[in-house]
Image (cartoon, rainbow, N blue to C red; front, side, top):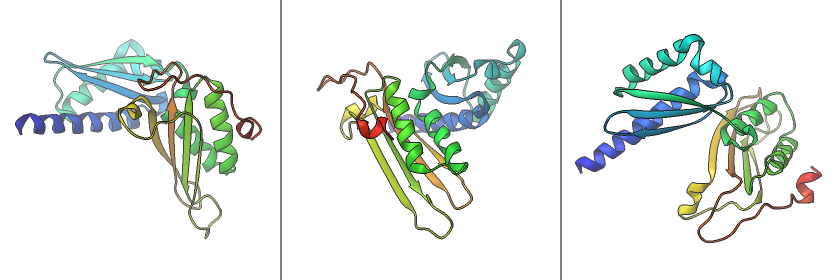
Length: 207
């Protein structure tokens, strides 16, 4: 029980650190964080669009962030490293946030989903799924849901861990809209099948 309790506590800390970094580094284009705890230190690898914003002049920003994490979450000897996102079109959180920005500008939700799916697949993804749910029309309209996918997206089993997933919320004038993005990145190897890059369907290319 003691081991299970410690595992749960560590998982909660990792989740809270991830949420904190997502908020603090939003202007740097925060995408994701990888946290690995060892007996000596805790390695925190942050993936962002603009590493310079995280590091700061002379490393002052990253030093302050490290100190904040240490005090706020009680993590001893945190070591933060910053990695630049290679392709923002394959990072679910960045994609989801981009969709929310477009929705808040009043761009048609179906067109946004169609365009975004096409862009994801054109960047080499093996599969992608976008779910948009909420007030998609003017004030007084009922909540609706748009769900579109293309390529291979596993829904069950351990292989779902190979799918990148993120969620964001748009806040247009007429109500909140949830956006969920799932992406199977290029080169993903599945133990039960071979998945090759799919030719983008006309329904997506002509959207």
